[in-house]
Every structure is written in C-alpha cells, then in structure tokens.
Image (spheres, rainbow, N blue to C red):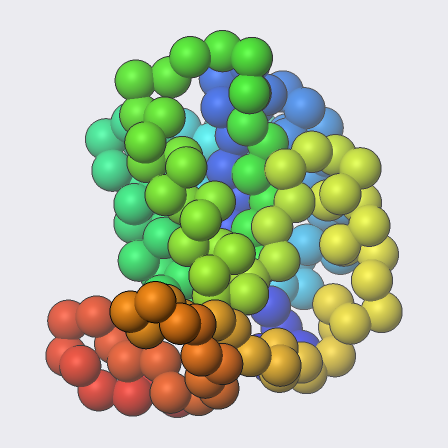
Length: 160
C-alpha cells in the first residue's frame, strides 16, 4: 500500500447519516486519500460534502460485489462499512461476502464509528504499508501466500 490509501465508504440506509457525520468530522484526513463508495452513499457524500468520490453501483444492485472485486484486484486498501446488523437486507449474502473477502485479503475493515476512528487515527494510515500475508484455502490446508502474488480477476495478470 502506498501512503495515499484507497478507501471504500459504505453505509446501510439506517447508518448513512452516521457515516456522513463521520466523514464530515474526518474530511481533512480523508481528502488526502482516494475515496470510493457504493452508489447512494457516494452520491450523498459528493452532494453534501463536495468530495471527489468514485461511485460503484448501489449495494443491493451489485455495489457490494464491485467493492469485493476491487479488493481482490488490489484497488482498495481499507474499508469503512457502517452496516446495520439488526435489520434484514435483501442482499445480506453480498454483505457477508464483502466482509469475508476483506478478511481473506487482509484488508482493514471498520464496521462502526469507533473502529473507523481507530483505523483513521493509526500512524500507519499515512505511511507506505505492506500487509504481511493473507491465507488462501488450498483443499483441506491453508497456506500463507504473499499479497504480491494476487492476480487480476479478468486478465489473470499479476497485480502491481
């Protein structure tokens, strides 16, 4: 990871106001990084806070899956995902898949304001950082492989 991180911002409907408040509070820090968000969240952040945000589709329309694919392709360095575990969502499977892929690829993921505050205030945020390794299931045994061996999903070429 370079010192300028690529940060994905996602929030369920009941949590969007919380995420907007958090981003507003941390705007100065976040503008030093590349921001992306799922559809509605990205639209709100762009409109209310005048931020440059790359937008994926809305979560229920595949946005969560797009963020997961971007993680696999090495285009996301950390995720801030304010999700609502008490409300059922039609795309719960996609949410679980996104959380899983972030863990598999050793991508920091904050799921509430407290963890987002800790992550954003880490001294590692502004430094180049190379996560140690990630685990990949290989049949019955897991093996440790370097992050540099990731391949681009579509092309099959190594990710720089």
